[in-house]
Image (cartoon, rainbow, N blue to C red; front, top):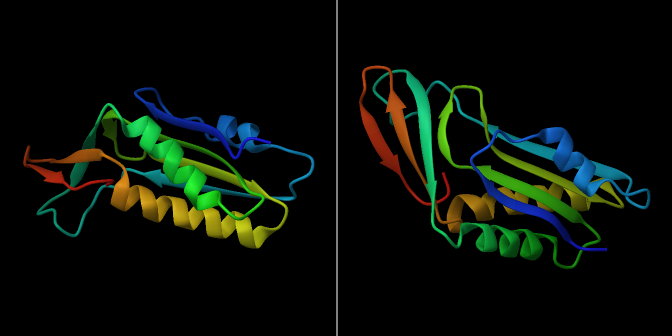
Length: 142
C-alpha cells in the first residue's frame, strides 16, 4: 500500500471526491478531509479580499509528496493532497488533503500535521488581492 496516493500542484480546480477516492481502502475505517478555501477577509487586509494568486517553485510537487510521506510516517495512514496555483476567487479550494487510516486518531493527526507542514515548508507563495486593487505577497505555504 503506497502511503502517498496523490501529491499534486495543480492549476485546475481541486476535486474533493477524487481525493477521497484516492485514499479509499476497505482495510481503513477512518477518513478525514481538510479543505482550505479562499476567504473574503484577512487580518492584514485593509479591505475585502477578492482573490489569491498562488505561484509555486518547480520542486513544489516533490516537496509536497515528501511532506505527505513524513506526516504519515509511523502510521497506517494513506494520503492524497493537492495545492492549487493560479488565481483563485473567494470560496475556491486552495488545498485539499484526504487521509484514511485504520482508526480516527491517526487520520486526524496526519491531516493536521500535513497542513501545518504545508504552511511552513511548501514552496508556494500567494499574492492577496483586495477589492480596491491593493495587493500583498504572503509567505511560504500560505
